[in-house]
Image (cartoon, rainbow, N blue to C red; front, side, top):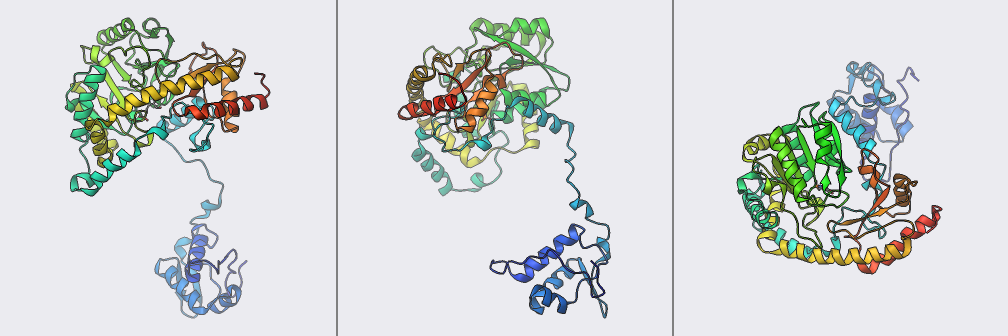
Length: 498
Ligand SMILES: Cc1ncc(COP(=O)(O)O)c(C=O)c1O
């Protein structure tokens, strides 16, 4: 409504008990109304006397607010006529009140969004309570067993001697000391003979997959992916516009013969040979050779995601693909997410020499190196023997946790799901009857705070029975019974018979 004395100021609500001064609240609210187009350019505001009465404010409060708005170009005063919204605001800002249109996004981000919604059946970390006692989330290490006291000491050591080196930008490749420790570790543990110059520290394996996709792939290139396989890596590579060729997993690992039949010219193969994710199979020696020979003949790349190779319980690990490769076609990616903790966001890439420079150039554009402080603490953790000690302790802890959880699951829900011990990794698979929908069951269980993952989320083609991924690493033995009982009760409430 416009009056001769100026437009009424509606919608002003002042909080007289809060800590924000009244003049500032008035300033912010008038400013917001101008920006939103509710007070268009040219509008005359009520006189200060009217406003004093309407808003029950002192004149000085109103003058203070008007002064600020005038200084910022929102209001102007015409001597003898009053205070007006500046003419520049005419026709501006009205769009703010219109229903919000979705933002215009690039083709890349539209494809990431749609791939994510296609592949994740709705289990999200947003719904997961960190302290939830009934969670079986598969990728979670034993947070309760992480040696925080040692970690705190190492972090404090570097915080105390904070130098420019600790606080400034780090080297794009990552901290040399950490790269040297990683080169030593992969030599001993994975048979990889590389120099520290070939090791690049990244903010987790996921960043490496994205960078490698940008570095090596063009839209329309074909890539072999394990089916079922690691979802986040698949999305990162698929979002580059690549065509995914899903390859089945048999008892020896990824089916290379299927790849040769369906798409021999693929540019890249993504694989998790030390513990196929999520089925847990270790790739046979013969299959490793077959894969490497294909890559060398075809000048294709292999990304070896070595996640979880540390947690092997019975058999000895096979040599890594990188160690077997004489043609420099394999890129080895490791992570500290499982051995230390995921929010550390530290991983590493071991590159053939020719790729080091281009990879680092790409990395420098996307990001710099991860926090030097955390890299320095991780380097100490490794050089002082805590790393290997922790792996050894976690190996036996996870073995005991697996045995205990498996026992309780078999006793209580063994008629509903079939379970077998795994030789590697941090989760079991509970195989369900073929007519059941694992995505629906996982979603419903999450509503009862029992978090698992559906196997079919990981699948591109349906050739496996449905199943649930049930993490055991984060389940202490004295909690296993209660957790399994919560799972059983949730299944009963959902109407299943056990
Ligand atoms: C198969 C696989 N690779 C790699 C990773 C590690 O990713 P990041 O280092 O980004 O945490 C995960 C994490 O769950 C995984 O499941």
